[in-house]
Image (tube, rainbow, N blue to C red; front, side, top):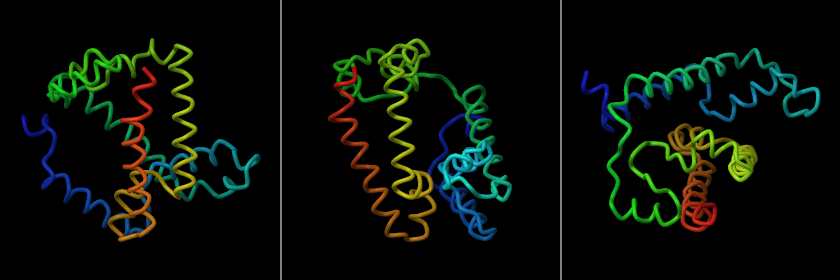
Length: 185
């Protein structure tokens, strides 16, 4: 039971991901979270407004099962497979985060200064949430897929476009962490 409550090592998780990717390729499916959003938008009638969403979403019903699995898996992991909420962080990281206003770094996986309901219901928190959603949505559409699609599917199929996109994700993440994030707090 202790093995289940700890992060799985790469030599267990990696082959499971590889097997999943093989099965997806075998059955002619592509994995990616942004394709699920397209299916949900098409299902909700967005095709009446935007031609991009005019397709038979019923052919992608399995995407909805994938989204349900993400939600259910996150819930199960949070409720029963997490030993505790504290995480071991480098003392320098804790110091750096406290300098930008995150004072309880390491005491939980999701700092209250960013992820609490109270924070998200402020004007600043709401604007950050909306801006982030628009940027992620635009970015995944512009890049032809999301981080999971490019990072797992694209790289495993040796796609040069995915290699470039994943490099852009890392550069964007570093830019956000070191340049933009300190000014948001």
